Image 1 (cartoon, rainbow, N blue to C red):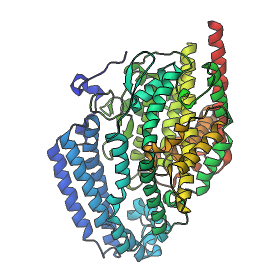
Image 2 (image 1 turned 180 degrees about the vertical axis):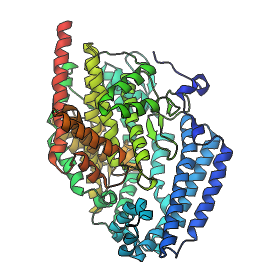
Image 3 (image 1 turned 30 degrees about the vertical axis):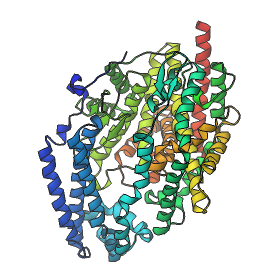
Image 4 (image 1 turned 135 degrees about the vertical axis):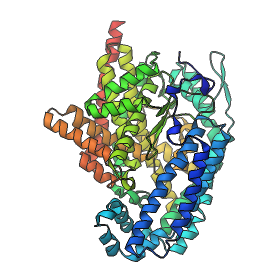
Length: 609
């Protein structure tokens, strides 16, 4: 049984963050905060002077210094608060730095328009000089987007609305987190539990009683259904804001307004949602197989997480570290050694404690090193989460080591490639090392759920998001019925008749925070998964040793490239073209292969019994 901790004092230091690598005290943090305020004041004095080449270079370097400092100023209170929500100093100082960032946005709102006014030929001519080389790509991209750069007075005016524009997101959080009242359900065992996210997930994945799963599904989703008009009103305000942004910044379409910044063709998005729908046969096959193996008369959405077999093996954290380190051997000794370093020097905060935020993430601190948050609980899922987040950490490490600050930060569009690639390597390694049929089935289920959840479900959500924005763009009513209707048809398209209808499921749009916090974000999970599937095939399954090594080298170059090019170009250099249908189809082929293996393992288990 996984050990639980009440306080952080009970946990050995080697399993906690060493945040003194950022700041050793709040006094030092405050000293840098004051320094940052002074740097901002100094930057504002360059207004009207950027036409002078030397002044322009001075400004760029000083702005970069402020940006570097901002990483440390933000991460220190943010990380402290994430491991202890009751830390008042962290909470107050996080708010201080967020206010500073808002002030930076407003006080420097003139920079882009003044740079544009100097002229493309002149500025890009300067970037041919070595002293400007770090800033070349960013400036080229600025002029590429010139038609969307507003005049200074307009840009400054809109900057005053930045906090107001985030109000719908804040209201959604208060409604769905702070003010939510989860109903209590009584399970067949007599146990009474609240239908919270955690309990909902636990019952759906572990409880073999279908009626219990239905009870907590109805209670959990019913909470959102009960306030669907309010959620629809909040979402409508976000849709209207997005359409207003499209018009204000002169984009041809709402999709362009979200994709053009990273130079991603809208055909990539449209290809994803179209092809994922067309390639949903393996998803239907998996639903049909689960219905049969679970011996269910009807297969519902709340039956999709329960394990096919009882598998309760626990993996202590030290064992998990060893499994992940071993699994990345195909990426070379240097990569493996860097990963060993990442798990051994206070970069990870491992165990759950009261007041610590849920989930897991990897966050970079430029000039220091990445930090990883876990809530490790010794399950197989936690082992894969460790491998996943270490993929992000190594990506951040390689980018920071090989890129100047100006181009070190990679886009979300490539971020999940490294993490999902590592998960696939971990699956291979663990399957190779075990003969236990139950563990093999559990491992295959883990991989299959990654595809159904990270690729198919995210593509479905991306399709919904596109259609919802179309409604707003066309001036059509945004009502719960309209939003439910989109979801109902999508689930029909993806699952056909293999899944019984659950009307409450169609209100899932009210339950997805990304729709409210980060519009047009979820599709990138699916595109990254498709990309890593192609790269995995080139590196692992290639028979020609020379081509295999070339593919590995290109992958390491991708990890090292940060944001020195547009993400589509970075992936093409590594061997992936997301504009091709075959790239998306590779995921459905991968799912079919895993389903073939699962069926074989099920038969082997039945024979052994």
